[in-house]
Amino acid sequence: MPRNRSARPAALGVSVRRVPSTQHTSRGASALRRRLVVGALVVLALVLISLSFRSGADGSLSGVQSAGATVLRPFAVGVERVSQPFRDAYNWADSLFTARSDAEQLRAQVEDLRQRAIQNEFAIQENAYLRRLLGYRDGPRFPRDFRAEAAEVIARPDGAFTQAVVIAVGSDHGVRVNDPVVTPDGLVGLVTHVTPGTARVQLLTDQQLAVPAIDLRTQAPGIVRHARGTRETLVLDRVRKQEIVRVGDELVTAGWRASGFSSLYPKGIPIGEVTSVGQTDTDLYQQVQVTPYVDFGRLDAVIVLVPLDSSR
Amino acid sequence: MSAGATLRAAGIVFAAAVLQAGLFSSIVVRGGAADVLLLVVISIGLLRGSVPGAVFGFAGGIVVDLLTLDTLGLTSLILTLAGFWAGRYAETTARGRRLPVLLAVGVMTVLASVFGLALHYMLGEEVVAKQALVTALVPTLVLNLVFALPVHALVRAVVGERPGFEPSGEVELVV
Image (cartoon, rainbow over all chains, first blue to last red; front, side, top):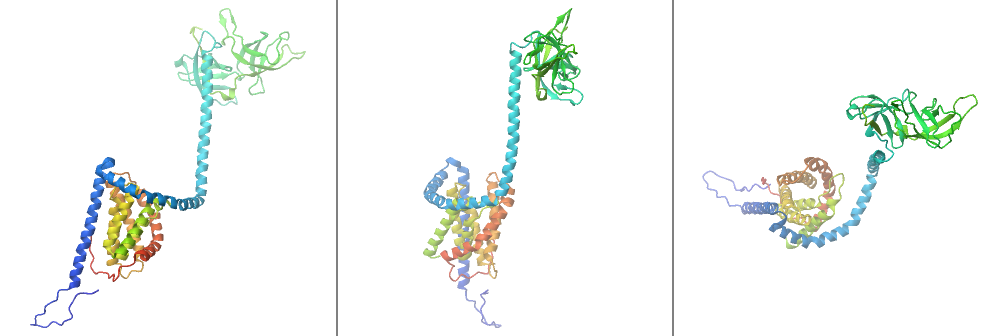
């Protein structure tokens, strides 16, 4: 690095005059010019930023910017068109590198969407089911002297020993023990236990439940109860041999009333369809097998028939 | 700079600005994109000095801001300082270093990101520091370092080096 020192030897008493260095002066001017230029550019940039920021989209500078963008637009369009194949090539190559992670991500999305689709399907089915409940409640088949208390099934006790469900209405809603429970398809069972907010419903498929029923076509009476050794099959018991019952006949609740007493179940609630009829010489009664209308494995909501006459 | 060199430098800066806005900024690798305009400005600063670096940085920034309709002057301010710093680096402490281009590009990429983040933050724009300084910075830095030497060679071939470019001994702080 040049130090700008004179090579002339200094001697005591001799005045030595330093020659002003032109290089040094030139460098000073250069540094000044450099500072001025960069200072001016920085200030100009700051002014532009301030004006652009303060004027916003409708300001005076936006017009300048729009004009500049318009002038530059052909170049931008040209670059866009020229670079499109390169961009496509890059995207293609990039997609190869990210294919594995993309596949995993898409797999997760598919799983998520599948779950949502299942939930939506459930919601649709539930909606249709609830609409049917609503239609049944407001329809002509709904028994008189009762009001409907719709309830969601919130629990299913272990089915190994008992056939029951827990519903989300209770005594606070007017539900009492022995209130019948139905769906639009038919009879479900009977309320056997009530709390203020919930109730337990013994299903028709429980061993303990028996319902007086008649053949809708022939009026042949009998008692519907659970068929031992099966899960959801019922039998129409106590049908005398002289009564006529055929396969395909519809069974409904009998709804008897005698000596001031009445059946717990209103008359005419569908129970099921006769699927087989048989009899032996030794038996006193016919053997009538019944398939219930209600699918007890898919109970989501039910209707409790609350008697209007509270003294019942 | 001669008129011819100035025109050639203007041409390459303009092309770099248009390509940066139209092509390179859209090629995102691992969250970051190469900043070719920054590389060109740094190369001009290293080859032609601090004043040309600052001037062409300002001009290139204006073109980018016009093309992207960003806040006018924002990119200009960053690139002005980048070009100036690169020029001063070449004029002073770059002497004797083996890879001044890579060093300048590495340092300026980081500083430009931090400075850009600070400017956007001061302007009240939504900026996520982690995105700018962690997610995008590392791949941008790598890409800039990869492109640094080819771009510098291109700029050297087009613009040329300042004749009699003699580094000075003085060091000054500008910012």
